[in-house]
Length: 312
Image 1 (cartoon, one colour):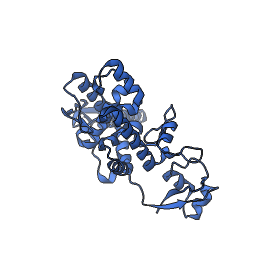
Image 2 (image 1 turned 60 degrees about the vertical axis):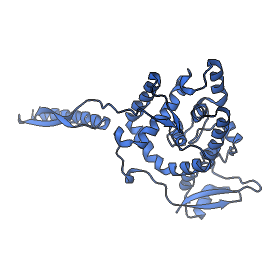
Image 3 (image 1 turned 180 degrees about the vertical axis):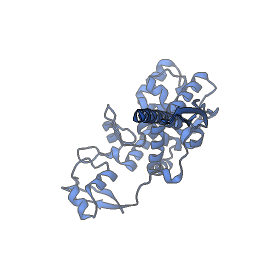
Image 4 (image 1 turned 90 degrees about the horizontal axis):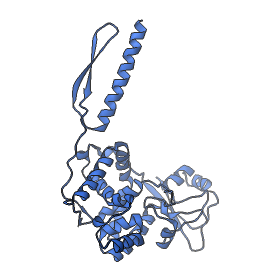
C-alpha cells in the first residue's frame, strides 16, 4: 500500500511539474498559488504554482518600415500588426532559435544591404522568408532569400546540379538587393517593394490597378501577402526590444560562426570528400559551411573560379 501511495504522489508531482514548466515558458510569472498534496505519511507537501495570467504586451503606437510610416491609427492596420506580435512572441521556441541563429548571419546581411544602399529593415524580410535557414518552399524557392530558379538566374546566380548559389549567403543577398532595386524603380516606395517580394511585382501592380489604390495598407490582398509586412514589422519590434516580449538573451547565448579560411578553386574537384581531407578538413565541414555545393563534386568551367570556406 505504501508503494501505491508513493506511486500516486510521484505521478502528481510529475503532472504539476509539467504544468509549472509549461506556464513558466509561456510568460514571466510570479510564484503565488499554493497547492498541497498528501505524502505517504499523511503530511502535506506544499508546491508553488505560477500565476496563470497571460501577459498583455504594450504595442508601439508608432513604427516605420524602411523609414515609411505605418498608419497604425487605422484600426485594421493596428489589429493586423498586433496579431503578428502575439503570434510570434508566443511562439517562443521558434523566436528564440531564430534570434540565436541570426547572430551568425545578420552582420553579413547588414553589411551587404548597406553597401547596396538598401534600407536596413529588409534584413527582417529574411526572418519572414526563411527564419535564417536554408529552407525549401513547396514551389521550389530556396535559401535564406527564397529565390526561385528563374529569378536567381535573372539576377546573376548560378543554379545547376553541382552549384546552387541561392544557398550562398553573400551572393544570394546581392541578388536579392538587385531585385529590391528593380522593384523600387517600379513602385517608388519600400513597403510595396517588400510586399512584391511575396506576391511578385506583376501581381502587386495588378491589384493596385484593379482596386485604384497605391498604398499597401489600402489594398485587399491574399492572406499571406496581407500578413507579410506585419510579420516583418513584428520581427523588427521583437528583435529590437527582446526584453519587452520576454526574451532575455545574453551575448553568450547567441550562435557564432567559426573563423574561416577561404580556398580558391579553379579546377574541377572529382571528390569533395578527398579534397577536404587534403586540406585538413572533412566532407561534413565543406558541406555545412558551403551549402551552395549541391553535389559530391564540383565541376569548374573555363575561366571560372570558386571560393570554398573551411573553419580554421
